[in-house]
Image (tube, rainbow, N blue to C red):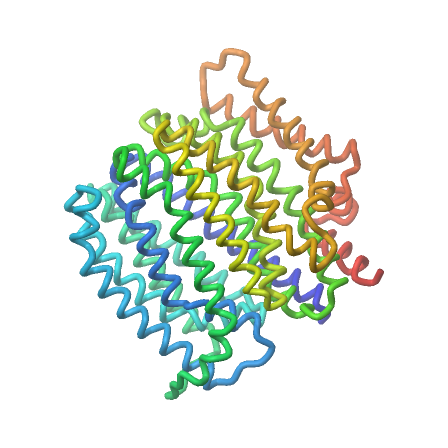
Length: 489
């Protein structure tokens, strides 16, 4: 099996996993959101930063180091497993003990109990980190598909049942804990790797050399990604944070999962050809165009239909998140394109450059928050939009230096898809002009019209990535043929 065939086989399973898992999770979250208040969503959002930092400390960059490394021994993998588990137990204890301080910071006593229970999730996920990394390195995404889809279905069902019974915020906590426990259980059931009774810090040394920089980069990213929820939760209210969190979740369902899907599949693929710059450059260019083809219309369309979407799916009590969602869509369009540039750097073992870029971007986040918080949440999000667009330029700097495919060349390949998405969004917005008695009917008309407009523009102007899919349908088979032909050039 060629690398291209293996990559697209993995892409199919990973895409099925993402669509299935996120579709189920999103559907469950819609039901739960109709039963809970924005304030209850805001409570769990206040703990996000602590959970994210804990997860990063547990992994310590070893998960990506395992995928990037060419060869690993059983002793090295076992040492990573026991190290992760030990750090998880320590972090869980620290989070539980910090619960009262967190509650005092936000002036919400219930956060102490929530922190103590959520700390258990750190230990649960640590049990599956090496299993997942081994499967990803082998580009075996079938077990991950079954793990995550079944977890989303079962945990979502329990959470909805608890919300109906009036359990409030605890239904969200149960969804996280049960879902992660099921994922880990399936990894151990379907994965072939098992730890041996061996541990040595010496076995961790060369992996930590690569992973430590990613750990620090990830810690920076986790902290600064959650700066906005922390500031909103502390300076405004749990209800305001709930609205922001809900808008962010709507935005992240399509774009963050697209970025994660691309990284999950392309990172091991890029790692395989890390010593061949020309193949890396071709792969990056194909990835940029395919991501632009999908990400831009998703974000432009979501921005255009935001108000009827919120009213139909979440009820009017969530209408306050509409403006937040529209602005976050402007920021989210660039996220998958940032991710693919960073995947190339890490695949080449340049975690030092990765870290350097993260430090620069986080300095911009501090500056943006410092300049905008006093003007309210809307202006804060505008600052976030500016930072995210600047981050794409920053992330593409070293791919330009190393591969000769930097910001301006990527921008040239992306612009046709951005133009088509903007024209589609304008057409969708015009569908709102007549008076609609039903928001649901207007939403359906906008969605159908948006798809038709975008596909027509792509076909009319014969955009490169779209035309390959058009000629080689069904589905991803067209891109696979394109990729195979391009590798032969």
